[in-house]
Length: 145
Image (cartoon, rainbow, N blue to C red; front, side, top):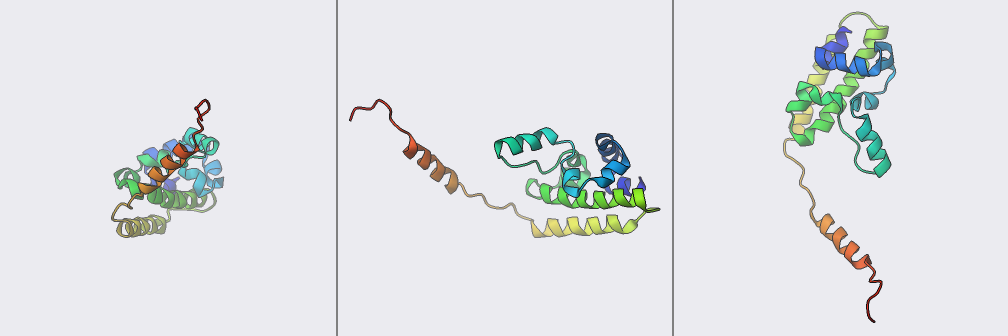
């Protein structure tokens, strides 16, 4: 799987193939599934509780994701997963090493890095408003009237 190794690196590619079962099976996965391989428990917990789904599983060990700032990691993991899906399909159905995949990935990661240089500002106002709503909803069961 030369294209997959070129995109993911040997360590992450080997772990990804181990989790998927085979290269053909990995090639059949959509990029969104490849992105969260290794974070299945967190994904199912998110589905069950309605919380935010994981942004990266095994892909967190990729150098680009691991070294990126926190607010860029999900976007970079999505780009890597998309190129890894294409690379796996090229390895299964095509021939040889496709160098343009890695070049396009590097361009995309560069775009993400320049576009999202600063962390997005959080809105602490929402939490306070939600706290006030909860306090209003509390019923006093045995209060004197």
